[in-house]
Image (cartoon, rainbow, N blue to C red; front, top):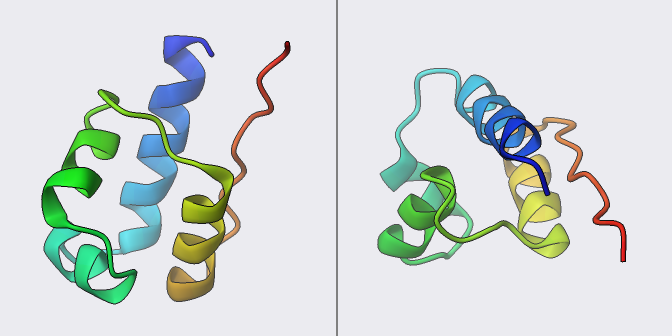
Length: 69
């Protein structure tokens, strides 16, 4: 996946947080803070299930681009 697509998904999550903290989101979606931090830095990539959980909690519509095999 291109760096541009990664940055877009991360930016979409930040926008959907609407001022709430990553700590708050980590607690809400039951993900260790350090794991969420790695995903928000682009070190580890989000799974589709994680994005769906984030969308549910933030009432957002973030799309995870499909990786071509």
